[in-house]
Structures are given as structure tokens and as C-alpha cells.
Amino acid sequence: MITSSTPSAATPVLTTRGRLNGVLFVALFALAVTQLAAMPFIAGLGISPLIVGIVAGALYGNALREGLPASWAAGVNFSARGLLRIAVALFGLRVSLQEIAQVGWPGLLVSVLVVGSTLLIGLWCGTRLLGLDRDTALLTAAGSAICGAAAVLAFESALRSAPHKSAMAVGSVVLFGTVSMLLYPVLVNSGWLHLDTLAAGLWVGGTLHEVAQVVGAASNISPQATHIATIVKMTRVMMLVPVLLLVGVWVNRTRQAGLAQGKGRINVPWFAFGFLALVVVNSLQVLPASFTQAVNGLDTFALTMAMTALGMETRIDQIRQAGPRALITGAILNLWLLVGGLGITLGVLKLLG
Image (cartoon, rainbow, N blue to C red):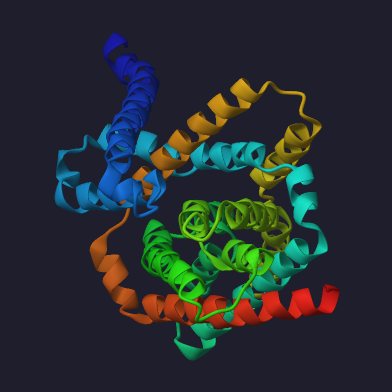
């Protein structure tokens, strides 16, 4: 009797310990990633720790995955799923309604038009033109349209898609966002594009993928353009909530339509409501600035952990199955952001000017 009861009593303890060990391992890995991302030659390129995390995690997951104890897998999965949702919610403390109001209707209208058009073009080109599956096309479009890797993470959590699909979307954000970050200042400073400070800030903030890329590009134009671009970018980040909710309704309707009984489970992205609530809290300015700064630092680290864990769960052979189609989708979207985004910016300024 004692022998038979011992395994069942020990199993929960071992499972919990393995999960904690897995989370700790991801945290230590993410700490090393953070230090690596802070090195001048990486930070100077505007590459955030999130991007370095998924690359380093993928390298480990494909080269050394046999060395990871099986009991730690639950901890890695929690970092890529549960911790991710918490981190996306905390991202709301980076946005305030006052900042969005500073750029007024031009910033809001540019953000809405860019995000909406990029999502539609990415979904259509990815699924209809290039034959990608819906999740990969949507993740790639979300990363381009809203806020880069953070948007990919949020959509991955809502869609519950495979990790390798997120990796492909993040790869697109890294490649084309970095190219655009280097190209935008050249186009403006060389005089090829005759844009004033407001137009340049709206264009950079309304079309570049990552927050770090926006700051990196705009800082090479002017401090005023950097201020405008950052606020417009935060407006796009704010749109993560309504877009997630709309996509969630659409995905669940299509899912239900494919079921014989017409029943399906609706995945409510609760972290989106958490994000929105923290935007309101941040707008009320009830939290000390030092506290908000500390939470934002912890949130960046949590997002880095999530990206690292996603990288660890990614398999290169799964990415190869998509071939160049995901990158082509990203290239089409990047061209749209460059040219179409400029057209939207100038059109909005003309309309409201």
C-alpha cells in the first residue's frame, strides 16, 4: 500500500518542481539575452531584447534541446503562454490617453488607416495570393501593422497557434523593420522626400514595426520628429485591444461555421482588457513614475522570457515548410507601409490641414 501510494503523492511535487525549474531556466536565459541585447553593436541597430530572445531561444531549441529535462517543458510552455498574457497586459502602462491626444486627429487617423489596411492586405496576400495558412498570415500582418513582436505575441496567444508560426512572423518584423529603420532617415535627410517635422513623425511612427525601430529611425531625423513618432506609435499599440477583440470574434465565427454542431469555444483575450485597464490607470497618473518605470522594466524582461521560450519551442524544419512565402508576405507589407503609409500620411494631413 505504501509503495503504490508514493508515486501518486510525489508526482505533483515533481511536476511543480519541474515547472519551476523550467521557468527559472528561461529567466536565466532571458537575463543573458538582455545583457547581449544591451551590447552597443546590437542596441545601435535598434534590435530589442525580444528579438534577440527568440533568435537565441531558437538556436538553443534546435541545437541543444536534448539537454533540456523533459520535466522542465511545462515551465517553458508557461513562459511562452501564461507569462506572455501577463506581460502583454502590463504593456498598457507604456501608453496614456494624454500622449495620444497630443497628436490629435492626424495621428489617430493615420494609425487607424495604416493598421486596418495592413491587416487586410497581409491576410489577403498571405492566404489568397501566396497560400499561407490563416494564422501565419495574420501573425505576420499583425506584427507589421501594430507593434512588431509584441503584437505577434498577443495574437499568438489569442489564436493559440504553433510557435514556429510566430517565429516566422517575428523574423519578418526583424528583417524588414530593420531595413526600414535604416532607410527612412536617408529618404528624409537626403531630400528625396520633402517632409516637414509633423509629416516625418507621423510617417515614421505610423508605419515602422517595432517601438525601438521607430525611436531609432526618428532620432536620426530630429528630436521633434522623435516625439511625434513615438506618440503615434503608442497610438498604434493602443489599437491592439480593439483589433484583438474584432479578430477574436471573426476567428470564432469561422471556427463555429466549420463545426457540424455549430458549437465552438470563444477565446476571450482577457489580457487585452488588462492592457486597456492599465492604459486608463497610467492616464490617471495615480502611480509614481519610479514604480511605472520599474514595472515597465520587468515587463520587458517578461516579454523577453516569453520570446525566448517561443524560440525554444520552435523547430527549423517546421519553418522550412512555409518556404519563402512568409518572407514574401512580409516584403509586400513592408512595401505597403513604405509607399502606402506615406500616401496615407500625406492624404490625412491634406484632409485635416
